[in-house]
Image (cartoon, rainbow, N blue to C red; front, side, top):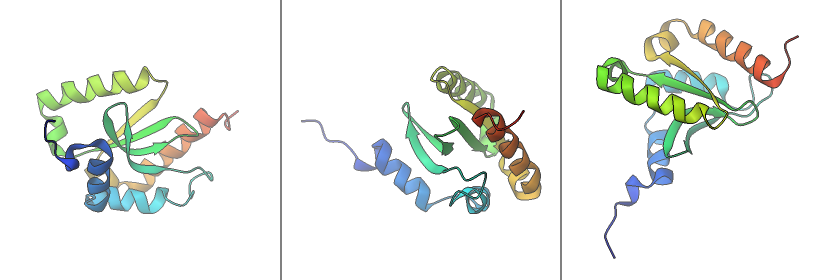
Length: 125
């Protein structure tokens, strides 16, 4: 049997990421948790399709990703695009914000999430 590192398993890695959230993740999570937005449940650091999603709302099939500065490197942009395509192929909607947006424009970020939830849940006429 080949040895493996438990911390590389998706669930263990997700648990570690939940314990070591960035400032932007902590700020957004404080506003998404406990069904504060339209009464829907969000999960943080959720393993889906081989990825660990920053925030996920199963009811709306909505993925919210926060990107640090490393995500603006060309190689990371390609990885993020591939990830988005794979998640959208599962019927998920992916929206992205950079950490600065969350830290400086939190209400605007929450408004985008709110509108997307309304659309995905059929609450907007």
